[in-house]
Length: 265
Image (tube, rainbow, N blue to C red):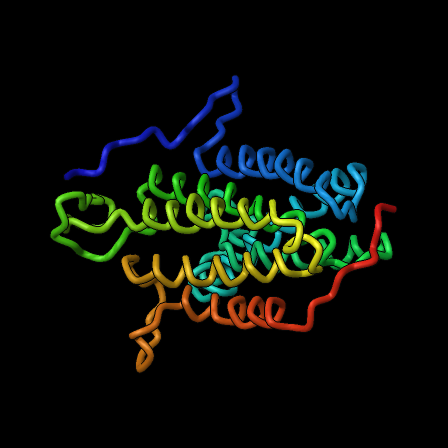
């Protein structure tokens, strides 16, 4: 079937045009913040509402800076830098990358946790289960924009993305929205409700890292590769970038249980 024509502008407020990708980030951050407020109220309460509100500002900056630098440096440094150095800050041209955004969030959490004299896992555990909300909306925005299409397919639900070519392709954006967003959220939300999981500092963080890495690796099977890995073409760059996440998440889950003594400041 032919990919439908969507207006790239989701919302027009006077001279201000908000595109689907930007709207996905705005709504995703707001919904994740509200979810984190609920999560932080569950025992053991390690962070306060004030700390969480402050952290969200840091995290938002980390997402924007890290996500954009990740897109430029991890995925296509030659392309962006060959055009113009200003392309680095033009978020509306090329978007942002999850792995870069994750690095930005990690840096933000580390800096803020240090200023509060708390373990960074006290904050990352609260945020872990909320992350799939933003991932889901981001993948839906990818689909609306017709970007990051899947591999050629003869499946009856395949789409023709005319901005790419006239071959029917997997709607891999929707697959990833389901895996990284819906499925991962359901699993993490259930785990976040288990007190035995919440009491182990870093456990929810580790489970998110493992869950995302697996969901991303499966979704990449259907996604058109953006980077040629040569002799390792049986892998995709997204899978390679997700491997450290899986390994560190496995370490957090398998390490000796540690019940945090950090309390609300």
